[in-house]
Image 1 (tube, rainbow, N blue to C red):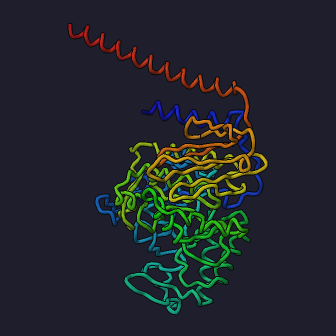
Image 2: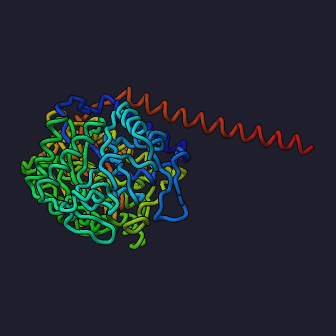
Length: 490
């Protein structure tokens, strides 16, 4: 099984380095549309250091489980393998809950997670691998034990206190000034690549824009986003309805995909703010929860959903554990401790796709054209002067084919699949017909038709030769072991 996955990975690598592949490496100034975000809860990822396991109870899903900054460094290789460029690690302030969503300070770092220096170590380790760290900064909904709440001089800052949660009066100019000062001080103390403003509540657009402008004046390369709907000038637009839409489209087969581009169309029409593209979030049920309720096979559902969304114009965001088909309803059941002993099939799948997205500027910024959209059968192209790609997702219960004309992709072309070995050529009618089995997605690079590709065939031969050698060695070793066992038995 591991050998076959290795062979598959080699095939993707060969395609990407083959002379047939015209992957564009030219880079202009990066925007958030060039990034992909991995959303993780520190406490639920990996427990590396026992020294900070303060009253940890792994048997109680509502309590701290022990994940820490050192664990993020220990398992950096998994995030790197999947090709993410930003790791969003949530709230790092002192907190009453494992998810960081009840902060008690805007300065102190949660001791369950580690120290200030260990947080800086995380940032340095990830930056070395060209991965930025993004953190959350909650503008409201803090713990009743928050240090500002305990300051009697700030009692007028509180708009509402209920069930141990405090809502700041975000229209109060003193609150606004204090939040901006705390935010800028926090951002200046660490080399963050991004800040996600959370719990923005009823904060007006002018205030949010002032925070964004102040952060960017301090660090022009910093991304500022939110996980709530807002008209402010965030670098990426969040729409909870978009997440719900994708979940409904891909949780089963043969579902309507009419609105597939609904939340991408404004960006395609020239809007400057890129959409956040995701199938679930830390606040929702897991996508796998919906799929299993439909009695569908989660890994297949995830592949079918992730592939087309990953190559849409915008910012791809994925919740931790998606790559191991984590399940659960919203809340602690969806925030399970990461199991690093599970199969890495989805990890490899995501990594293969991200390698294309990272290397090809066309896949991130190229022209977009929807070729097919029919109740689960989706096909679109991403093109530029340098290269052409075709993305197809057959989220139906039947084998489907997509017909492309010479007017759409040009004369005398070849379509080479990245995830399979399929090659599609122009037929006598001048058409290119791509056939996909049910619940299968793939990416095709469109290239000029050529003769025999000697380097590609040579590399392919090496892969199969190595596989044959592996089989021969395995068989011989088995025979040798059996002879030794027979000899010992005598």
